[in-house]
Length: 420
Image (cartoon, rainbow, N blue to C red):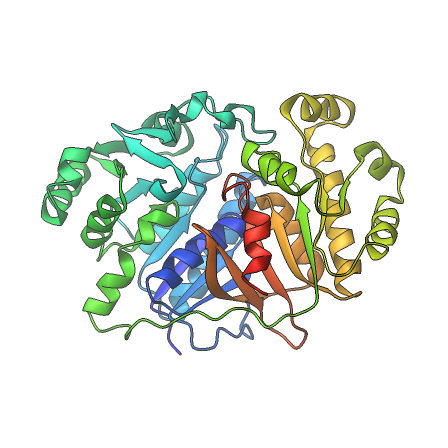
């Protein structure tokens, strides 16, 4: 079946976030994990989201993988590409958002692309080009202490121009609320002035729908998952997709497991919520460096009651993260936690754990790769931006890949209650 909408995400949880948004708008969506090939089966999907692990890798590699994903999608009928990055614009001055967006502008022959990471349901809004996380500007939020991509500036225009070769302008809120024609006029004016990007203000879902309508004929759209909210309506209006279809829960019915690597304040609160009621084990990074941490965790897990979810985590507060990075370096410290959690996932899946929640984008990429999953059918939402997914293949495997900052304090309990 021909794909009508293609998307490229720079991490695995961001991909499920976007896919969930499209499913909520009635599209049939498959998420492909890593670069697809000619044999990749996408079934009857209207939209395919390709999940890369390109947020923090070397920029040249991120560009090559993203362009290859774009070519694959366009070769299968997608006339519009969404480049999905985090709603907190996670990046560094060298990229990778700007370099990838520049390459995709060329690959899609797009004169100007929207830049809008707004996701109001999770407290991410844009006003006068400034990105807010709930009530705080991005650079004053907890993202300033992110272990891999600390965000110390809140201006999306400055952030984008620091990474890109091109000029970036603003579509102010009053223009957005004047409707699609006013947005298109502003886009044309910016393009005529030599801009290749336009940061768009958005405080509500309706603002995002206005932007989506205005971008109906754009070859490339960039932003958080919210920017895709209005795109399915365009496709339905043009007759390229049919009536909305309801998503189904995954088939897996085995034991339940949470693996958390995110150090975000939201994930730490979710861990604290269940620590006193579920079997819980924290990864000791020093023990992981010495070897044997995976085997010890698996042995401990198998001794826990089989009627209760098990939580294993490497999450820590900023002070502990800083101390660990001082001992091992930031890259190795992160890899030790990811490798341990992914090794645990691989062994426990073989022992009957087939309902797995993973918290953290980098962790999700490592865990899903270790499990050998290559594509997911997107199911219903647990929370905004986080759906249950059914791994396509012979063995049942239910996955929920949660961005570290997403979900309420009861997210882990809510997830498994949906499957009872």
